[in-house]
Length: 342
Ligand SMILES: [Zn+2]
Ligand SMILES: [Zn+2]
Image 1 (cartoon, rainbow, N blue to C red):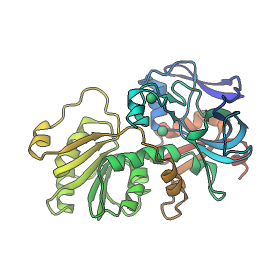
Image 2 (cartoon, rainbow, N blue to C red):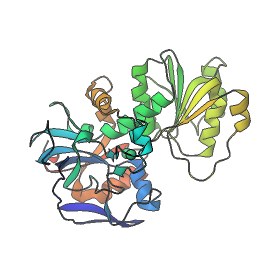
Image 3 (cartoon, rainbow, N blue to C red):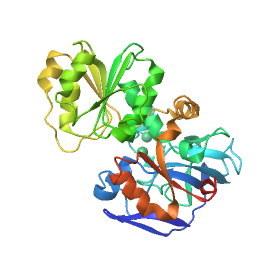
């Protein structure tokens, strides 16, 4: 089969790769859509998670069940499915505490297990969900990003009637804004730098960072001087962290969803005097079913966040768009045989 393989940091190659058969508890899935994640772009360049190269990349995938492990129940060949890339061991201390998403011996597609940027991939059956007949594979491939964004919102302790600030207009920021609608906050404010992307978030007050002379003052004015109950960090800079801290109300919560590289200087004085809560958020605590529910919700229209569907062999164009197309692209999906003919 053809696959996109990270040979070493900075070198992604489209090449022939052996097709593997599923283990007892796995499914072999014929890929129909595989979506590029911001973390793929970072992994390819810097490999922060220590991917064991050579490795087939990609972790946001959907397709058709092509083969079934001997111990798997509940799936049939031909089922249309979405896959979640994280597979917990079930035995380590984190797993025993019920925190499977923080497993200490985690298997992860595209990191230490062959990923979804390939014509076929294997994944443990308990990490797979069937998708409704009306859902296209591209939309289904968003199950994992929607799951993790949902976790970011939950870690932010968002409640109905809250004012919520989202910083960052990348795919995670926009998905987060859409998911927030279902938590019925009174106000959602998005701070970003690209109108094209920001306008994808509906029902949200938009602040363009470069065009607003004083972003903090603007947020304070919008919240009648109170600040926001929750800030969700979907941008990885220390400036964004400190902006969030300055915009939070006393005892507000910051959900650190984005990876902030280095050791950023943080305004701990205001964390102290406002008694703020700061929570990390990275993987999701099994939000697969809810993610499928949200992806099926026609009002949220999350599939609409896919701006480009590009045939797999043209992967270079897809990656260039995902990386540089901030004024024309949001989620970029690689499509395969069946999806291409839609
Ligand atoms: Zn992802
Ligand atoms: Zn574990």
